[in-house]
Amino acid sequence: MGDVIASLLSWLATGGLSSITKSLERAYRDKLNAQTSEQKLEADMRIRDMEARRDIILKSQSDNVERWVRVGFAVPFVIFNFKLVVWDKVLGLGATDPLSDNLAYVQMTVLGGYFAMWTVKGLRK
Image (tube, rainbow, N blue to C red; front, side, top):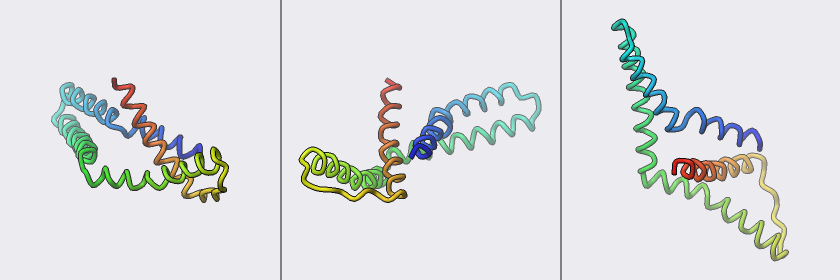
């Protein structure tokens, strides 16, 4: 479970929109400081790559289908946790079997993604 959280935090640190923006800034700086046409061409290629990545992330955030897919992944785990906490623990009316290791990793990824997104949004404000 710790590996999943570490992987998620690593992705946020290296693969998020902010790192793409920083890479774009570096590539534009490299292009301005380029001495040869080969260096300019290399910087242009990096710029196009980073812009494409940025556009994909922005497009996926505005896509209704992808938004519903995320909700679809989250709902079963919300229901499971609600049942586990309220029905089993608070009311003492049941006993829920634990999730398999694979489903526990998926749950931690889904929940970690939501909490990480919430944290990043809070830090931006």
